[in-house]
Length: 123
Image (cartoon, rainbow, N blue to C red):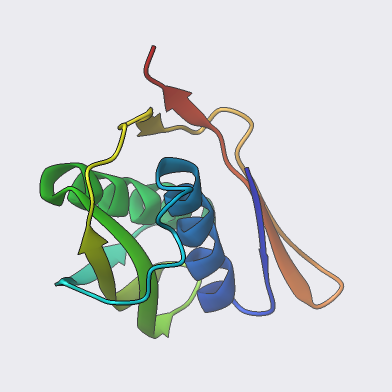
């Protein structure tokens, strides 16, 4: 999956939206929220931050059967993010087993961020 953003916050939010769209394509545009979670993630660099951020959201989604599709990011840089995420309870097919480092890349080119991230899928 690829994600883009003008800022680190945009990039991380768009990556999370892309993952949620993969898990919940039929329900992704539902804007009513039933669940609210606060997330704070710290990492050594932007690549680790992206994987840990997406892994945290994936775990919460699986545990809570929730499609998180609203990300209110209060702080983000290349080593940390603080956000409140909102979503609706919907049972997913749980196709993603894990967020991986395989072919992971995060680049800042021409004033915008670009990330490529791969998922391990369940069979």
